[in-house]
Image (cartoon, rainbow, N blue to C red; front, side, top):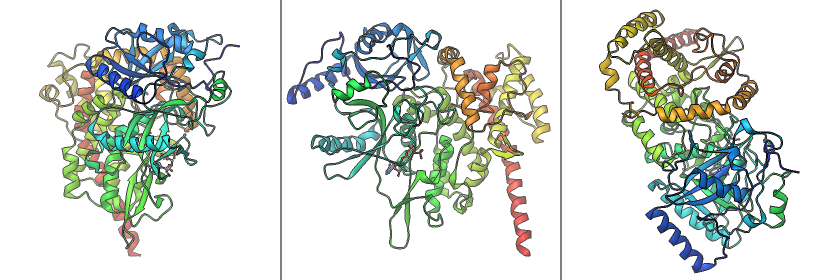
Length: 615
Ligand SMILES: Nc1ncnc2c1ncn2[C@@H]1O[C@H](COP(=O)(O)OP(=O)(O)OP(=O)(O)O)[C@@H](O)[C@H]1O
């Protein structure tokens, strides 16, 4: 019986770092192995690269690439290794569907091998490693850091300690809490050093050990705007963005890691053979420093939490649009004899969603969040540079999607403008959070501003098809400003000068990338939309009914598009580069009136409370 690729549960196999051409795995021991690794490293430095190809079901293969390699040769090697007809599949690298050229792929990057849904059928042959491949000896180390950043130097030391302990037989311990698979890796004394979360064991991923399975990597996950298998790089992004450890995010890296402790779900041909042969599983995982702590924020009163810690974590959450800052994701460590505590933010896998949705900020009603930012915090915020953040993330995490970067830019701009306007953290968080009214989920104030900004950019395109010609834009903006005046009661000023000088234009068009992404989306449309609508139902996301939504103005949208949009009120990823630049301009222009409205609301709330206190 051939295996069914539709099955959410697929095989995991021992990793093999393939060289070109495919040769059998020679057994190498001790010095010979070290020498070989050094040679490989030198080879990579001079010309080649190594990539880690992950199938949708979690199976990971390390592969050495030569300059001459292309998608075809990579697929051929995969075909041999996985017994998988690769013409049925496509190779993706973040947003990019790789058609042939591999020059954009960086060393140590993970690639995802995806089935082409159009060709999928019950007879589609399955991923079934052959015996020969299973005998391949993994020539890479048991833990390999994916990425070169200096920030990973702390992680390197932890890796060394763990590998030593592994050789002495100190096994990792599975973590029982949380929905995803996680493991404490220990040093030779048996102390936990790192928490490792394999990407194929996330909630809904094929090898989730806690029963939350049902999706392949790359499909919308627990949050519809974060795909299954993509929480790991978000954890790393949060650490990398936390400059100078301002918010105290523990050091985190993406790793390829091999150990028999990892979960491989039953019911799939190949897994049994793997177990019988006592083969180990290689995974792509987030690897985070273990921080000893006394409890988490859900177990304890919050009054002892330092204002500065709450502010710093809040600033990070706003920048990265964290959708999962619940009390359990804030570890608390006692640091003094007078009840002083240190907060450690963890679990950033659901930050930087592909589209705005409802964030979750546990701190929003804590009194600390209503205290104004200190001068030091304001200075930190003002120094944030979202363009540089994006450049850094693209460099360190090349698989990151453009859509996530746009959310980062948008939220950082929002934070900077809000802080300089004088809003406190609680007000900023409230503006980003959706409200339920009459059992309907309302767009947040942030989303309303985005919807208006987007509408003005879109209408400009409709009224002025050649509106890229300077001069025509001005006319359209006049129209928009009149319209917006009725919404916000303020006359907006926008000039072409603003457009050309916009700091968010990186000077190069990402159109190519978007086109590739659109191609990918189109291919997946049917399947994904089903999932998006499912997720929407699971999350109780209501269909849009308000006039403010960007969707309501488009009666001609396909059913698929409407389904897709039901998870979000406004998408930022579908704008072309020039639209995005204009959008950000309009967005910034609209923020002033929105902040003023929020300040008035806060004042009247305080006045109401003041009156009631007199009684
Ligand atoms: N860096 C860390 N140091 C120490 N303990 C940690 C760390 N990260 C996570 N933990 C512990 O592991 C548990 C599970 O981790 P985490 O919450 O990140 O996993 P998850 O599967 O993403 O959980 P959830 O389902 O709550 O989102 C946490 O509740 C915490 O106790």
